[in-house]
Length: 331
Image 1: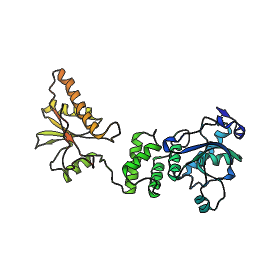
Image 2: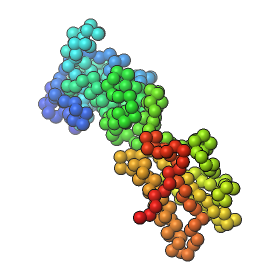
Image 3: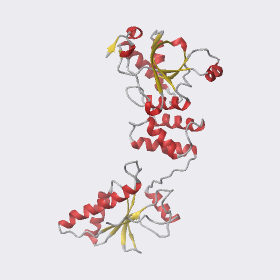
Image 4: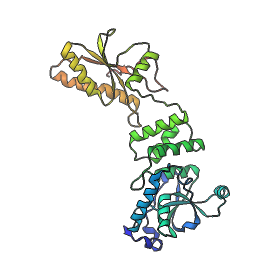
């Protein structure tokens, strides 16, 4: 529901959308009309989760144009928290509130001449403030935070002791505040944080060159990964990531049809999740291969041209790093 900007301070506040941060253990006190002069707003402090760029200026101008056309009551307003004595002392201010998020909107509204506005008031600690800021910055149509923003915010939380400096704690916080972000993006952010903080990663992920490096440095066996002939095993060797088996399958079949050479495949997996663990991914890789062979077998086609000889070690907590993880046998 849209209303005129000048009506915002006089409407029933029950009409204003109110967020819930229960999953962050953050208490929402309610919605309140507050004078801007009563809110401590410092752009560098109130955007700890976002790296400021010239995008901010353009976004403020865009918001001014949007507000001049009306206010959507279905969108959550900016948010404040009762200011702490520590902040009062640090910045020598007596203002009763501190802005948690909505700096761009607050700036746009003030530039439009607004003296006060509706704000969500919350109650939480330092960790909760970080978490709320990251959650609020995720959804559209607000200026969506970049991966570098989330990386920077998580790094600051680690430095301030708000989350532990290990992969499990960082991943938990990231999933908490960026639930709707694509998994590929979250994996990238996690890797950047772990790299920047010097935190070892539990799982190893391979490129073709890294697979060759593993074989050279750690493995007691020598393997081929690019479809080359392995003179020791008398087969061609392939490296294949889960999700791409069909490509390797047909490449191996082509070699078999053309010159009668059989092949082996060494698998490696993408990022595991709660529902698709590394063990489950490895099991599914073998099941997919068995399924493809089964179809050809029903057609009377020879199917032993490709053998899955194992998976590269990836779990630093569980896998033996000097050998392949053998496929599980059918029960």
